[in-house]
Length: 150
Image 1 (cartoon, one colour):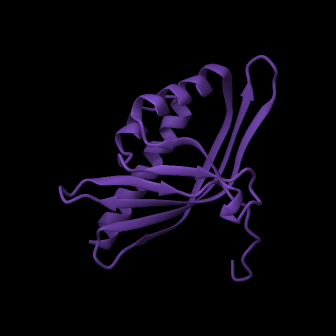
Image 2: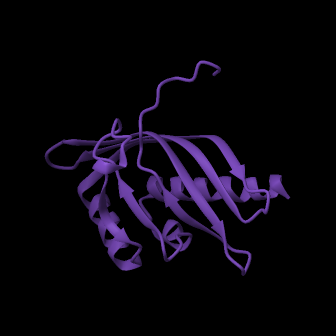
Image 3: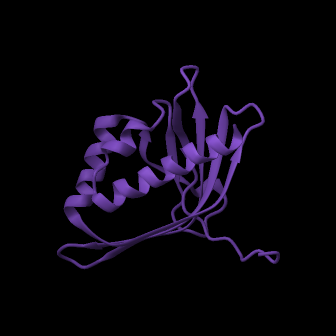
């Protein structure tokens, strides 16, 4: 069962990636848990959550869709590289997390200013009583020193 759950979680990571690549938030929006809240660090070295902020607040499908549409209308996607490093599934098979390195670069269509999402994130998923999996929480993209055993 763990392998099947890991496959489901990887597909959710991949679905999100495809949404950014195609600039279509719908498949990604469909998998978000209605209670999700997503704080974001001001930069990739801000490990202390005392400095984190909310950009969008608690999940609101229309507000989040509008925010992402504004991003897509204003910026061109230069590249979107994502690599899953680990998927961990709870013993009870009802929760999981994925550690993903992201490198997503946006360039403003007129000013050419860049917005670079780069670092390691932890995406947390929960299984509903219906059996459906939902994306529940994610850390912002953070820098971490290289592991000595890697």
